[in-house]
Length: 259
Image (cartoon, rainbow, N blue to C red; front, side):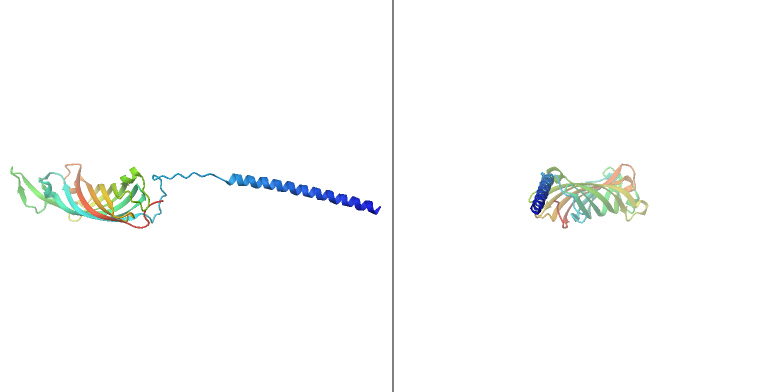
C-alpha cells in the first residue's frame, strides 16, 4: 500500500517537472524572438551626403572680422564743372562684421573725410570761395563739404556662392570677390542747415589672402556712396555721389570657417 502511494507521488512530481520545463522553454523561445525583433528594428542604414554647398551654421561668436582701408574719393554733385582731378580727395573707412554662412554676411562701417568740386552755381557749400571764370567768361565757384557716413551693408561672397565652400585650411579660394549693398546716413559737420541725409552704398571688393588659414586679407574696394540730392544744397538731380577706390586689410577672428 505504501509502495503504491510513493509511486503515485513520484509520477505526480515528474509530471509537474515536465510542465515547468515546457513553460520555461516556451518563455525562452518567446524572449528570443522578441529580442531578435528589437535588434532587427533598431538597425538603420544612414547615407551621408558630402557637398561643399552645404555647411553647418556657425555660432554667434564665430566668423567675425574687422576692416580698415584708405584711398581716393571723387565727388559728383549738381552743376559740376571742371576736370576729374579737381574733385579728388582722401577717403578712409573702418568697420566690423560677421559671416553667417560662407556666401552671406553683414558689416557695419564708418567712413568719410571731405568732398570738393567746382560748381556753376553758388550754394551754402561755396561760401567764401573765390569766383572763377572759364574760357567763355562763365563764372564758377569751389565747393567743399566735410562729412562722415555710417552704414550697414549686406555682403555676398560671389566666389563661394558660385564655387561652394572650400573648407577649413584649404589652399583653394585664396582670391575672392565680394559684393555689398546697404543703407546709411551721411552727416555734414560744417553745414548745420543740411546736417543729415540718407545714403545708399554699393561696393565691389577683391580680397587676396596671405595663408591657408585665411586670417588676413589684402583688399581693394571700389565703393559708391549715393546721397540724396540735397547733400550739396542743390536739388537739380536725383542724387549726389562719392566714388572711391580704397586699399586696406581685413582680419578674421577665430573661430573661422564652417563644418
